[in-house]
Length: 152
Image (cartoon, rainbow, N blue to C red; front, side):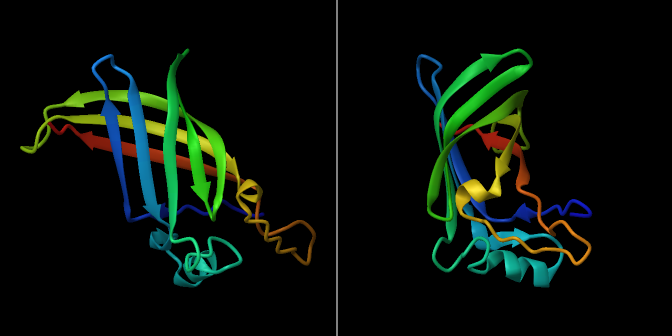
């Protein structure tokens, strides 16, 4: 492992629901084949059966199971499904505030992150280097910058 590779998923959707007693729930879906690392060859490899296997598992999904206050923000607990494997995860969550929006209504902003082990989700490819070590690390940092539009 020589450097970090950054990428993004371009197609995704989600809902944040807050009930009358201020209990929040979150659900999200990601089109895994929308991965973009800026390198078409690498993206094709990531979409292959060796990694995301987008033909068999076209989406990843998150469903929250709870939110709790923590020292510097919140923790969003939930079940994350990737490549047909569902695992509980905990995302560090920051609430950035609410803005009146740009003509479509109020917008709430959030920042969330989690470190996942790719092997937990069946992505266990190892590509050894001639000089020792492997091309791929096990840890993947997922960072989300979210703007949620308030709807009636």
